[in-house]
Length: 211
Length: 405
Image (cartoon, rainbow over all chains, first blue to last red; front, side, top):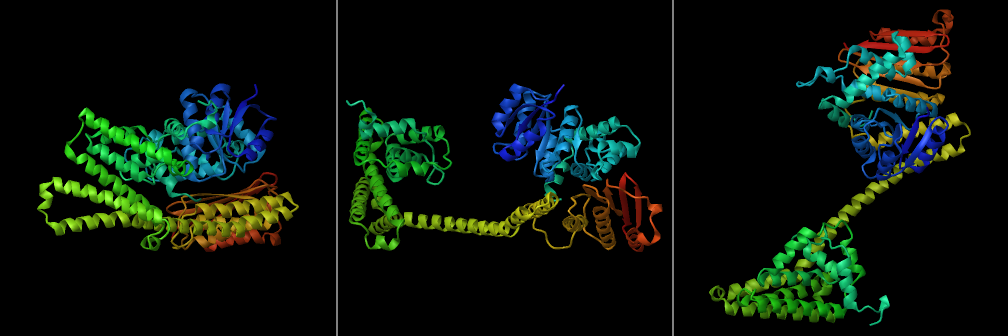
């Protein structure tokens, strides 16, 4: 079955470029360059994956994700932005995006990312993996939940491989595990990122505006 | 009555405007909550008169206070449009007279209903409107210069100020004669009080205007300085790069230029003002990557974890990293080189990875090992280690590590 995608970006030129790249492999459910339009459009077209820009007038990607997830909790979001500032990345992931890629991503990689998100897995760019390692490297907070507020050694190792620029398949080969296991680890990290109570996460992101 | 909309009487159109338009409370023109300013903007008359009317109605049984409260609650804060409405729809002379008569009618109705607090209402109304007349005129004058006020400006202003002052004086005299306690203050105190009130009314708008002008001017200057700085930077960087891109005929070269420009712009836009205590490891590696990228047209992705200040052992690692990046960019034929740097409490590690052609380390001739040897030797001298893993077809990974002394 073809994956139905929905594009949200206030930058028309970029929108038409991505549209041209992705319509070969996916069914285009719709697109919008406006936050409110996008929320209505996604609710009425029920796409599998929404590619959403971070910075838009009227609340940006956070508003789109927050509003849609309230009524359609099964919608999957892939954040797509020119910004790779930690506070943007972390905020989008914590609001419910299942992945974050920058707009300089190659068309093929973007299509792979969409498929991965549609399958329910997480998409971590090398940089996002770096952010997560950084954010979870600090000392554990006093009232921490060890289930959520720390990475397992294996998760840490998977993230380091991704940060080194290896694709999931290569990570699997290098660590002698299956691709499925890599995906499981990454999804677990995503869950920790979204649910973790670490107060430092927000503070960490705002402290490091430049990487 | 003519049915054509153009034949509406001014009063009708004023009423229409008042009812149909959004009544808002201006942010930039308010004494208490902007109710007077908002009503004035909708009616197209100076705010001073509306304020005078509110004061008078408040004395007359508190009707003004009720009106004020209702409008305060009902009308939202205006963001920016309030003052524009005034400028676009100044009330005609007929409308102004109509509004004035309406106001007097309201006062008379209140009096006949019995909603009236003693004999103070009429003198205070005189006082308020006289003050409004003077205030409004002198605020018009203050938009030009104080000197023109001293020269008594236009005859109309002078007449209005005199009329206003007379109305005020009459009001004050009526109040004073009806109040015994004021007379006990003595003539000097009364004179001082009158002079103070007069000065406040005449010079108040001018002083207020002066403060407003000063802060507006300061804001404008800051804005224009920021704009000039932005323009200068964009000119030096982005425009130059765009020109280069237009002259470039290789897609690879264009990508490199675009990436370099992007990185530069990002740094400029988002970098916090650092105290120049020293470069961090991440900054040094990123800068080195930018140089290699520019030289070989191969994108280099740098990820840094746990970034911290470059210490004694770091320069060797940074230099070796740069060398490894150069090797990868020059020889591997990879589309992209990845650099991952991890700083922990007791070590700094770097991995330089490419997924290019790779090579068989053992098969490389002794005399061509120079570059790899120099990386290994450099790290060894600095008390660290270097490990090169590569095989033909799978790419190369260089792992550098230095412990903290």
